[in-house]
Length: 267
Picture 1: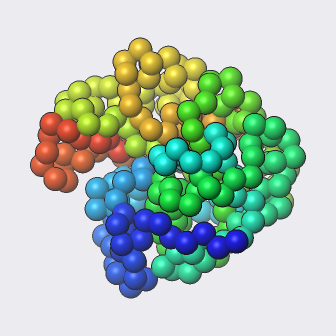
Picture 2: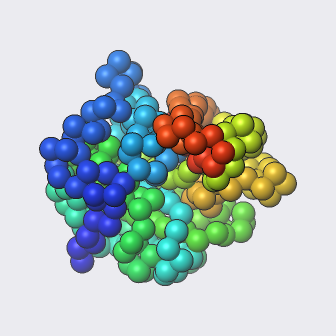
């Protein structure tokens, strides 16, 4: 099965040369790369969130295998939808799915189901691939797309992902894709997002859920971030580092209806 690019020409340039030129505007060439257990990266158009995504991927040693966790914006498909075979077509070339790792997840994670419908028009995972391919051309992925789930479900899936990563033949990076507050003023978004970021840096999925509900924080990737946090805590993470934050107002000058963009590496 070949999944065709849905965001090319909208969220990022659709030709290989133009895409590389755009990526290189956001790469930090002085950054020191380190291995990571997971990262958080945004998924807006590269013009808007490219600086934050570039800060994340410029600082991360990208292994050959990446598990992608992102929110379901289309509403189609299963609540925890995985593609278990085939490839994703991209301007820089196809990205194969790591079928063995995908099926290993399916074997131990009863809440996760094979469902390509959730991925067909979804941009939250696809927008990670230009940066991932730039730094790791020979890449394979396991894409998981989530509708909102309970904290208990997130913790269950996170522990199951961690078990799969522990048993994998080589290093695996987990990428959780999210944007932060949506359509708040710049000042309000910064305040609310700071509360959520504090819980993320503590690697506290429960605290993140509670503050998001209490403050009405509209981060679209609450579920994938919670899944990732559960996984990295099982994998022995000891440190989370914020490497970027900005809002769309800093790009387009509209300070009344912004979207927040966060970059974090977890080690």
